Length: 299
Image (cartoon, rainbow, N blue to C red; front, side):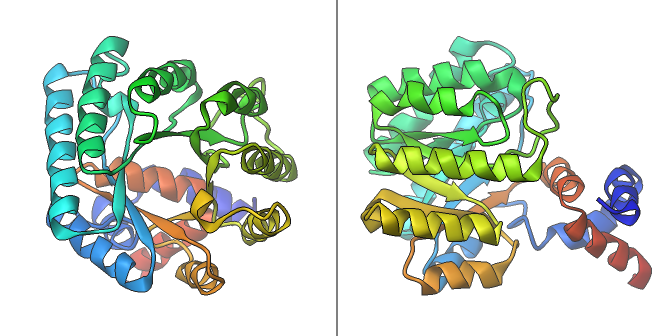
């Protein structure tokens, strides 16, 4: 990382909120469900699928988890009513994981049950390493009841990921593989860029070869190419995998993937908690953060 990138990355907390908002518009659909629906229509028109996330995490108040459940139920109903090609993503800590694991499980079960009624699907996101074991337990619990309606996320920068893949494979799981974005200690996470890439490729190939459904979640062109070559070499049917990208990140690469005949899903976040999400994305990607500096200079 260059000195300039480091200054941009670590100086983000001091950037005025209105400036962050100007840049965040590209990466967040908006604050309302109508904003999310509008963005999903745009993605569907491009030929992409969607997965919608109501922004929020680290909830410590039970009443807030109830509101989150209600928001997700409304979202599923709206997706169904509008005929949108989209599923949803949920963060366990928004639904009570840091309050009580059983509370979170009950809340997630309510959401997944509604998704199952609509023939839809829920992706349980993976958060930082303090949540990994509990999130995997949660996934197994919900998967037992709704095996076709729920999936999980694994992160290739964690040392444990290959072992987690082996443990989950007997379930014929639906797994999104990503690099990982949280700052984790070296004792549990790979830090070298090429090592993380290699672990990503190894694990998506293992999942594909052994019958899992795989979400190849990356904006790294090298990993996109590796995913394309893996599905070609292994002769994987088109309905057994998809590429996944974040809203607003490299739309040209999105077009390349779709033009090559692959299915692609765009992560569409919305909600009033856009600021913490945007700050995390900006800190993880100094290239995006450059746009913040530019916005400050031309305001």
